[in-house]
Image 1 (cartoon, rainbow, N blue to C red):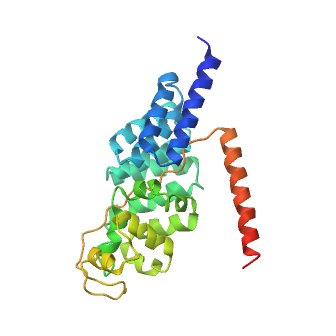
Image 2 (image 1 turned 30 degrees about the vertical axis):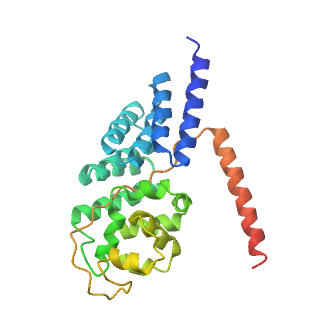
Image 3 (image 1 turned 90 degrees about the vertical axis):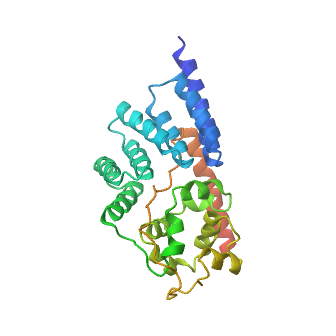
Length: 266
């Protein structure tokens, strides 16, 4: 068996899977990572990336199976526990998800992804974030399909790479009453429209979604809602090769220079 040939084939399939994931085509990503696993079933990264793809499709059972396989192959790799926690969180197994995130943070204490997931699980276990004036609208941010909808939409996909946006979305998912304090952020409004499947800039659509209630934080029209179900943090991009990382960094640097140039004319 020509190991070098098979390694190149598997890496090529992984690169195709990464590209499909980044484009929001999670089904194709699953196919590509599955093909890579058929070539090399000993690579923990392939299972990690396929787990992320399954989670983005809302198939948390399959995501869990792949995350468990990833951790069994390489139990010292922090991201494996991030995948494991996300899958368990998607299945509403918050205590087990909390344990997975905690184990991952023992290996990588600076991982913001797992730290955010851990806080959401703790909030779910304590029953925090129930009801409130903004509860009926804020609970939309706790739907299991929210993150995959945002990742698949070309308007909101790029927001998932912005740390301040992620922090706001996680805060709202953990406590819907915080939605009111973020309504002045157009990214949040746009995300709301994607999750609801409506044009958020139409007042009638927003009022219908709230059962006739308005935007004001002190509105009393919204009926109490049950505690929201925290969802997994957005899945980070699959593992990339050094060449892919270099290309992405080059693109980001070019965009940064462009922004600097634009700012000079403001």
